[in-house]
Amino acid sequence: MNNFDFYNPTRIAFGEGKIAALDTLVPADAKVLILFGGESARRTGTLGEVEAALGNRQVQLFGGIEPNPSFETLMEAVTIVQRDGIDYLLAVGGGSVIDGTKFVAAASVFDGDAWDILLKGGTNIHRALPFGSVLTLPATGSEMNKGAVVTRKSLQAKLPFHSEHVFPQFSVLDPTKSFTLPPRQVANGVVDAFVHIVEQYLTYPASAPVQDRFAEGLLQTLIDIGPQALSDPENYSVRADLMWVATLALNGLIGAGVPQDWATHMLGHELTALHGLDHAQTLAIVLPAMLTERKDAKHGKLVQYAQRVWSIHEGSESEQAEAAIEKTRAFFESLGVKTRLGDYQLAEEHIEPLIKSLEEHGMTALGEHNDVTPDVCRRVLHASL
Ligand code: NZQ
Ligand code: ZN
Image (tube, rainbow, N blue to C red):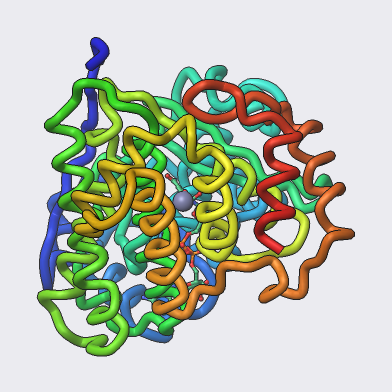
């Protein structure tokens, strides 16, 4: 295991009714901008509950942050923050709203063109406004991490950034707030969290048994509770477990000190940028084909994954690895998330533009060995047809 410096300052307020804790979590004299998405936060009553918990604080609202939040919309929020002297942000929503809020927090106090934040991956962020979040969709882990992904529609570019300055100060995780999610978003959340774990676990053996066992436990929990989260939407215990797994999947803990992959995510971002697929749909398409393509490089961990996560012990090691990849695909399909480009009306002619975009965005040496080139990605996409 490598040396590492693990730092995560986000405070978690977990459980039913925890929105009331906003009164102590948000400074009493804060001038707050609540950021939210479409109509779900208002329709479900969560927004009203948040406003009530904030009591007499000065509060303004900014709605309309879309799934895969756009630079264009977020810059409207930046204008309001600067114009009205907002000094605290509160995200109410899923990963898109929280990611968007991270961008607004940094861009509002950024010197220069805010798009540079994305071009430099966040390394040029030196400060940001403080913010917290109220999570309504377990999936991305954005509620307890320092990453975000922003899309510039006019350029069809979806790019990530990271900075220690954009950790949420706190996140309220009330599992009952996820009861209103449509099945598609629940399934997306299970797949996204699953692939986050895989991207940090399924690389090569790194003498990190704690991270391995932790990752395997999280994966097995998702395999157990994913179907129940769909079939029994108001089961508090299941939704609570799902919310906590999704947070732990990407709060840095299982990835500390171990190699990481992220090739599936980067290729997936291009599919969303060009074709508007949900984030998790792109992962469900790319991951099985990516694992098959890189079966040899990932042999040791694939066999471990097969044996420990899926309890596959029959056949040769190579057969076990293949069976585990098939189990993974079948799991995504069983949740209703399709795993082939054709399922989303995409065909061979769509592959070259995706590869061109990857190259334009400098995504030419991906994966834990930096050897996932555009050629490799091209083969992966052909295998996903
Ligand atoms: O817009 P509204 O009306 O609020 O509806 C949303 C949206 O349409 C709806 N929704 C959210 N909570 C709900 C609800 N509907 C009913 N009841 C509720 N309680 O769900 C839809 C999808 O929301 P979104 O926030 O887009 O989903 P998700 O949480 O999956 O976030 C996806 C975004 O996060 C990024 C993705 O790239 C994508 O842009 N990611 C962020 C990461 C990070 N910061 O670490 C890591 C991930 O890999 C991911 O890339
Ligand atoms: Zn993801």
